[in-house]
Image 1 (cartoon, rainbow, N blue to C red):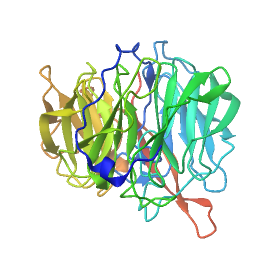
Image 2 (image 1 turned 120 degrees about the horizontal axis):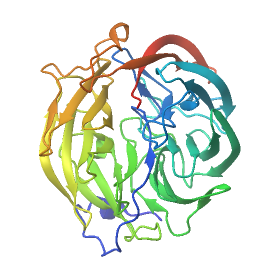
Image 3 (image 1 turned 45 degrees about the vertical axis):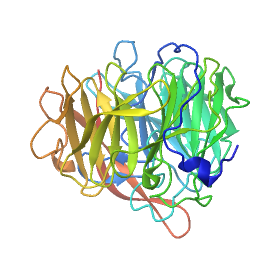
Image 4 (image 1 turned 180 degrees about the vertical axis):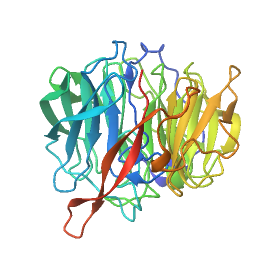
Length: 396
């Protein structure tokens, strides 16, 4: 459903009362940036990486896999790597998604301009990937280092760019046009659209959006009670309170003004009670509490990292890592037992260049890196290898 611009501008709307929380999701991903990886201080790339075992309960082994999405305009692919016990990667195969990659208008580095475009769901054993250029979403079943049982469905909108999963429900964020989220049931035959789940974000983008005005990420709160969307240049963090049946309990999102400009990526602390939002304009991170009515309470004001254009943010234990596209660095953060966020060092750089990535100490710093090709767009709509960058990987 579409909302009027006036409805979209209404700030901090009260949400209807909803049922209790859902079971804790086991969905996790190892990635910095949807549609892009934050290189270990070298560059950003138009691919996404997800790990099948970073947060899984199984013991580490050579059959653990890392998945990289190429986002090729002519035909999107997933590249699979086997991860050894020591973190080394070996290519295992490449799989076509059955859809096309996408390239947002004027995107300088990250073609999808989002976080969460490739998600591995440990509970169902499925890998979910957006096909932005086709308006579709692909699901694979993961069997060791192999992808099987491919299914492709419509995303319910234009230019899908981010995916969130909780329990047996997945939501896809469509960045094109007015922007929207569409819910799906995760079944044995892939994704099935959830009737009554579609909600408009009330934006005013073209079908292929400008990178700075497209929404940044969709994410569930860890308890599954709320679905969160960031809108970047609209400067809002929008909340959809959820019912037990996986449907939003409100007709339109609860719209909260962002504490920092250009909210992009979303993550949560280890307790699941604090939401952290990365803001690109001044490379800040704000800590929030999501209230029961969908409004947000600022727990810690925007924390600057001194870098340029913070876009992606991911958690590893009580540490967080953010990718800064403006000067190609990775920033480390640490949260104390009282929930106070701080930089891991005075300069705000956990990794300063690809040549120095890896080999950090055991105090929450990056420990390994893998080199992958950096694609770029060509005039013919293809992707060609242009350079190589180091991608940070954290593992058990």
